[in-house]
Amino acid sequence: MTKEVIFDSSFLMAVAERPTAWKADIVDAVGGFEPVLLQPVRAELQRLSSRGGKRALAARVALEMARGFRTGESGDGRPDDEIVSAALQAGAAVATADAALASTLRRLHVQVITLKSGRAVVL
Image: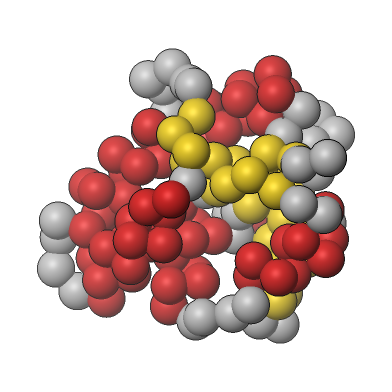
């Protein structure tokens, strides 16, 4: 069975800055998965990519990495709120490097994938 994994900008940008075998790690952790990028997250990455500096470069690389991801259904609220809502509605896991978002998701019993020591792991 394929599990949906919703990606947060923090996870994608962290991987863009420090490449890892995150896809293989996620497959090892949850099995086959379908990567999903919500429109508010894509918009956030596009906004960040239009600025200068290292974060803009990381956002551009993150957008390129997410090119083949399915665009998930969501409202037009804040990215974190939309991620929480979509994950609960779809029973999806969430890949994030944002500690506050991860904590919220765990309290709601949503499976969280994060980065630890250069590897993607399930919390």
